[in-house]
Amino acid sequence: MAAESVIQVEDLKAAFGGRTIFENVSFEVKRGEIFVILGGSGSGKSTLLKHMIGLYRASAGKVVILGQEVGAVEGAARRALLRRIGVMWQSGALFGSLDLLGNVMVPLEEHSDLPEDARREVAQVKLGLVGLGDAARRLPAEISGGMAKRAGIARAMALDPPILFLDEPSAGLDPITSAGLDRLIKQLAKEMGTTFVVVTHELQSILAIGDRCIMLDKAAKGVIATGDPRRLREESTHPTVRAFFRREAMEE
Amino acid sequence: MVAAETGLDLAWEGSSARLRLPARLELPAVGEAWRHLLPQLDRAKALVIEAKSLTSLDTAGAVLLLRLERAAPTEWQGLAEGPAKAMLERCRAALEGVKPPAPDNPLPPIAALGRSVVEAVRGLFTRIGFLGEVVVTFLGQLRRPGRFRFGELLRHLDEAGLRAFGLTILLGTLIGIILAFQSSIPMRQFGAEIFIPNLVGISLLRELGPLMAGIILAGRTGSAYAAELGTMVVNEEVDALGIIGISPLGWLVLPRLVAAIMVMPVLALLMDLTGLIGMAVVMASLGFTPIAVIHQLQTAVQLGDLAGGLFKAAAFGGAIGFVGCRAGLAAGRGPRAVGDAATSAVVAGIVAIVVLDGIFAILFFRLGW
Image (cartoon, rainbow over all chains, first blue to last red; front, top):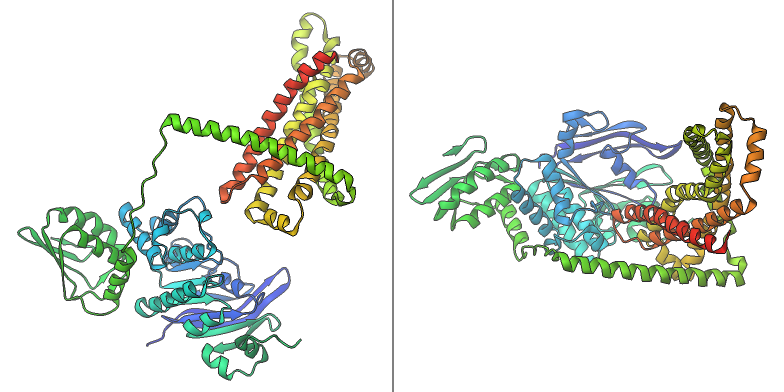
């Protein structure tokens, strides 16, 4: 596969009020790959994701998505960029006043000229894809955490964006649902050429779907490992990386 | 006929249609196609979809094709194995077995009225039950006063009281000035301006001071109680407290309730004093010295007026705190729940103090105060 890179992160630094979360983080994400950001709790995985989608401003360095610098685009270019990325939030972040179908229809209403019945059917398909076809009329307050997560993915995919960011997609899901989600992600990556950036610490998920990964570490304030997760598991000599993949408690 | 922008080519042979698909059938083209193609296909008896050149299909495109399939018996030609076909089949599978959602049946008006009455009565009962629980918890805490959260009480005294002082002073002064000024106009016709202190003093001390302080408390603190407790309910913090073995009433409600009761007489007194000062300012502008105003007040107003007003204020504080906490703890789930709780805390709080005020008016009259 001609692997052109769709996301470039260069020397990114995140700091809040003088406290540095990570710095000198650089990597590239290539089209159609499933790129996993991993690390322990508090290592800045979600922070990195929020920098990548432009929600937080970088303290130093930059993020470029599809040739556009995320922090710098404005107006129509920014809208066009937002249309081409989808984000699944850690807790779903569904709009509580709309039912699931309505939630998935929101991006379609904003970014397409589909008539109402077409939007409804597209949304229904998206919910069906994540296994929520029968729950379309439920409100977010009435569904379980796992369902909210899946509905969040359905909403992120509403416009078939070429890049999807998933924040902890399988955390808190049962193994069967989680495996189904992993399969869906792999399928989309393969068939649609969708690029995934996945933040997770679920080992099984990482090994099942990850093409490449980076590992963030709290102590190192940055990236401590890069590469194929399966090879990292076998070959890495870094103590934290080894402990992570073997589920060992670290020696203090 | 060709829909130029979409690249979809529709041709007719009698009543059967033949649709040639472009290489890419994706979201930007689908809206146009949906609006133009579907009405035309109503009269089609058969549809042939030629998908030879189709290579790129997204969900919206697939949904369009599936919708076309439903419009007429469809025959596919040249749909090769590949991403496009996989997409189509995936979407077909996703739509399969989904029952169209049942429309919600609105209740007939009489049944809706009946339901709302039943709910209102039920709500009244749960409020009485909540009041009973609060009283029982309070009595329980009296036996073990060490468990009362004094730190929390101080925090709420600060928030409900000290931080409301500025607003109370402002409103009190303005109300004193306005009352005195408004009443000076008709009083002047009788040359009775000297009785303005009687009028303003009695109305402030007995009624307006406690009521206005109550409105301030309901707006600032009652809503805050409802929002805080409502958020805690939504986050399941209240359930967590209960499971740890701590009564949410003792832990959360009592300090707030006691703070509201303690703070209200102070706010009402501040309201009274600043109102009287405002009145004195207007009187000074009418040519009466402060000494004359004070003398007039002494003859008109008795300690009982002040004490009765402050007692009422404490009762109002209890009502507002109670209503606010109850609204918060009764909050439902979802993002609107907290807003609804805050709104109902303010509305019910103000209604409660006005109703209480009426009850006190009758009570004081019967007691001859």
